[in-house]
Amino acid sequence: MPPSVWVPGAKTAGKHFTRSSTRREALSLYREILRTAKAFHWCDESGEPWNLRLKREARKEFEASREEPDPLIIARMLVTGRDCVQQIQNKFNEADRVAWSRIERERER
Image 1 (cartoon, rainbow, N blue to C red):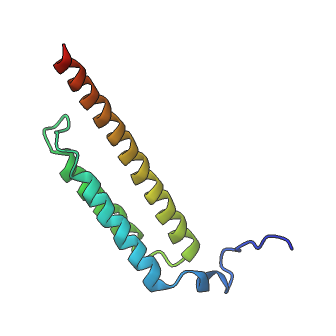
Image 2 (cartoon, rainbow, N blue to C red; image 1 turned 180 degrees about the vertical axis):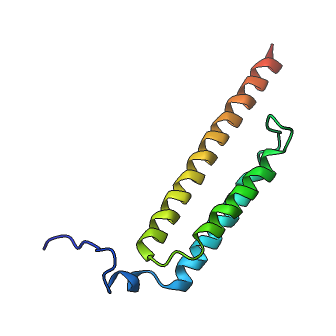
């Protein structure tokens, strides 16, 4: 049996993504972004805290995407957003782990 392919604009594409499920997923992603932004407490070059800047940019992106009618584009944005947040969290956790291991090495001297 050949793999099924979604065709943009096809009538069947919309039934895979209900409006309430994409809304829930978008809200979950937005909350995850806000939780992740809390960890960025230092300031940028202009003196603005990064967490405020990241929250503002996330809100702007979500507001710009609010009226997107195509469920495939919405799904792509959600997957891309989730992947980006996961990558940022992984990098942040790795940097935190390296910093703590360096602190432990310095203590042992």
